[in-house]
Amino acid sequence: MTQQQAEDDHSPSPAELFTRAVALLTAQGDLRVWSVIISVFGDLALERNDVITGTLLTRLTTLMGLKPEAVRVALFRLRKDGWITSHKTGRSSAYRLTDMGFRETQAARTRIYAPSLPEPESWQLLVSRPMVQAARAQDEKTLQEQGFHIIGPGIYLGAGNLAAGDGFLAVDGQITRLPDWLRAAVPPDGLEQGFAELCARLGDLSALLDGDIPALDATERATLRVLIVHHWRRLLLRQPNLPDRFFPDGWPGVACRGRVMALLARLERPALDELQETPG
Amino acid sequence: MTQQQAEDDHSPSPAELFTRAVALLTAQGDLRVWSVIISVFGDLALERNDVITGTLLTRLTTLMGLKPEAVRVALFRLRKDGWITSHKTGRSSAYRLTDMGFRETQAARTRIYAPSLPEPESWQLLVSRPMVQAARAQDEKTLQEQGFHIIGPGIYLGAGNLAAGDGFLAVDGQITRLPDWLRAAVPPDGLEQGFAELCARLGDLSALLDGDIPALDATERATLRVLIVHHWRRLLLRQPNLPDRFFPDGWPGVACRGRVMALLARLERPALDELQETPG
Image (tube, rainbow over all chains, first blue to last red):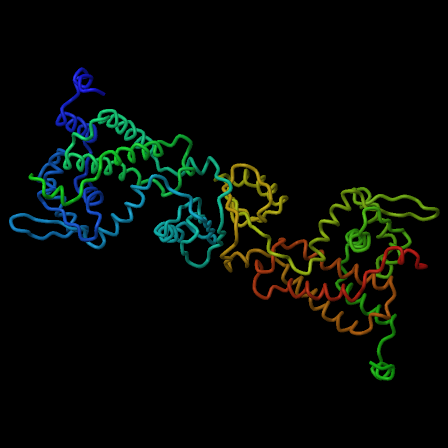
């Protein structure tokens, strides 16, 4: 596009562009502040000891339209729940993930940023002894923590290298038949609509940003990245961690993943240092 | 053993020995005549077109203590049910298995004479869609005919190369955990006692025949073989066709199989021609 053409199209200014992009990503008005802050740490604090200043947190959350009072409450809650610690540096505060917080965000990152979920080398199908539902609930909890999926009463499917208790029949190998009834049962209720809506919004965002990303500064890129990651994460982590072929044909989570990956690749992640040095 | 020693031991004559051996194998008094005749064909008519004369059938069944009238009724029933056909040869009749009869005895032979049941190269575990018991009954029938075993409601285990209908989740591979509850559930009720009793009787028979088998003629050997195969078959075919490790520890079917194989190896199978030429 030549300069002349761009002017003919009445392209928005970088500031207008950013405002519209944020509006697209916050139109639902349902941002949970404490969860957004986790997304900030998850996308920007990649090293164990990375620190995020209160100044940067305030700047990012303000650009997202969140109220300072709500951010203060959320930070208090995250400290109380053991996700973050804070310390004073001069007049302002700085925040860091706890061991637990880092472990959790690290584990989620392997799912959030995966361009596709590869088939594991081997699957394990477990069958438990016949038992009443009350007894089964404990098994279900333990096995889900180990990454197994409940296929039916007392039937669990997981990646083949997971450990399990005694008392199960186990067949280790390949999945050679994956029936439609199981694929239909894999996604939790409501998730399809959620992915479809996000997919549409990300499509609009892609169109909006088309060709104009270099005009966004580091803080603006970070803001948009965090919002995209946030929405994607909230849906993705509700769906079972299974390869695409386990989902119904045309599952919108697949297209959504493609759009997330494309946008994150275009909205290059700024280094934390660069962000913190930017004047507020 | 020298001639002198044998006389010192008051060894039984070959005729006494045979009488005692038959008594051991018919002590239960529960021989089903039509089933015994199937055992005769199964052990002696190995080729598709082998014919067994009425004369030989009468001789063998008489030695087992069966009544000629019961044998006639059984032969009539076997013809009616499509197991055998008969034709006249001069003054007497001759019998032959039908296609169905040969197929069935042939299929059973692979289990009856197997010194051990090898682990298949691959297992297949199937999980069906949730369904009511009435609908499941048809699946269970179809899959059992294909050699699958019912592990639980809608859960089937079979050798990996078997075909199955659509609609199942299938994992193909190795069994890496085989729990005690499943092994305890594998044998049908009553079978353990049956195998234990047969095992004891075969132990007595082995002791009785120890060293004296060369004295038995072809008809006597055939009679004892058929009785052994008959008892073994009646129990074996009631148990799921699974390798020994699927049964509870100390399962008497395993020891029983060993004794059957050892006795059959010692009681060499006479050729059908040799038996038919023997004067009645």
